[in-house]
Length: 131
Image (tube, rainbow, N blue to C red; front, side):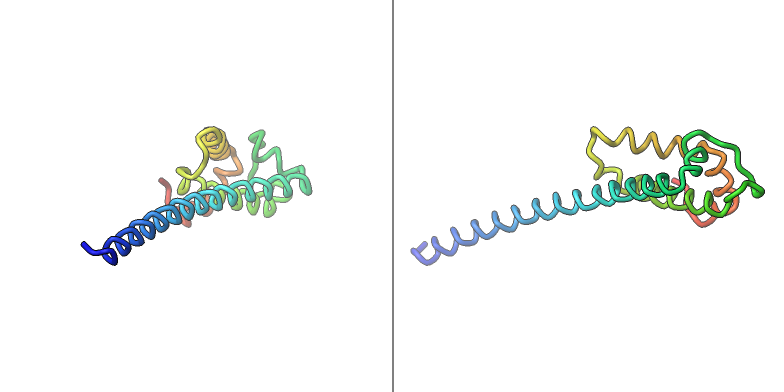
């Protein structure tokens, strides 16, 4: 092998290592962005609960709800947001840091037990595919 061949081989190896490094960096960046979207959604839930604290009892305390409940449209819209967020969490749970994963998954399971969730699911469950 001549000098040009050796130089070409070294450059190829360095280029391959650079591409591998960029690939790992890109993967980490994507993972972080996905998780940050979960955090942003959590903050959106918090923002709504600060603006409309009466919704809290339907998500966190299992308040009974039916079609005649005051603010039913707002309650159902809030539950729909939580369902959309929950779906994303369930689909992309591998991107959640292990130290946080159990909390997110417990939140989803707890919400699924609420009367508001069950009412929404009864009316619109066909829109979603259950895992």
